[in-house]
Image (cartoon, rainbow, N blue to C red; front, top):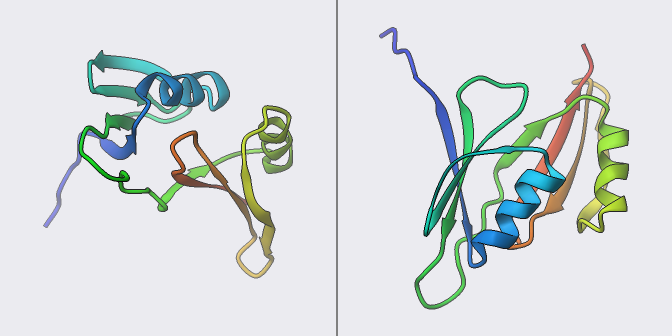
Length: 122
């Protein structure tokens, strides 16, 4: 099978859509491309047709927490310093995987979703 996909969209739940929109746009540099009462779609700079959708959690109880969103970045040390300067909660230390040429660390968004920043040596 030779399937072609038009885009990639990852869902992230939040109880405060405005706070999350500010974080993803102002801190992470993503661009708002669509907005409604309970949904904000953001494009990811440097990619084509890759989006994050912030979904407002309107049910009782805690929203599901995303733990599987990884952002591939360049200059991971500078990216980490930028997040620290903006008081973004980091989860643990930088992890190095020299066999794979990979470095990564985790951080959280305002709703407690866990994101991973990763850099692969070329």
